Length: 307
Image: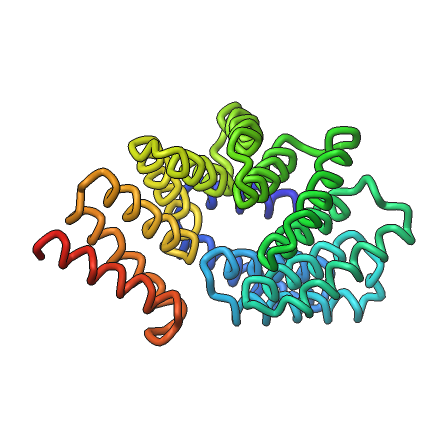
């Protein structure tokens, strides 16, 4: 599997989404042909494919692959393995993105309990469970719980074997909570540390876009609209590079539109908001509240711009 992951990493760095999907599908087809379609290795490939589909906001396909991978793990009596925990966390993450908060929370807690029972509190999977719970709590508005859980994850990583990538992701999660709580200075300190870690990495990380989006939101709240626009624009570029025009791309585009409006660049603002609406419609449908919100905002901006 080492060669598989090395090749996959190269494809992600290249940014060819079709090539990534085809590579994963071809690997699965080859495993099926060789009689390895129900092996733990096939579950690993399915997990990567599910993660890819989640990244490009194809959530139904993501869920299907994660469930298939879990079925394989159970058939091989590997329900208590770190690999199975990772797949469960990824499926729970898809639940979260689909708004199934109860199902997501139950699965996060299940994984956390399983890891604690097996004395795996210093594992990547345990950090991930905590970070994912923190994100869920943040989306539910349970900000104090979100920060406490995210801080626990960060402390584990700093004292354990957390990688720079994992620490940077956790720092950005905490910065997002502090931003929502109005603690701009603390949010800025956390985001700057995360960005320093990302900047020092030899290759750009897929989560760099999220940290740039947070930095942009902080700058916007401080009325520094030029910096906000720069960060939102860079966040869009990275989202498109790694996952195409996904839902995070739409969010960054709408944020860029708001920054441009503050700068008096109304036609540019309208264009960015229109793009956000188009992406949201493709991914979520024309009647989705987010699509309608972006489309209404685009119409208002075009009116202001005299277009």
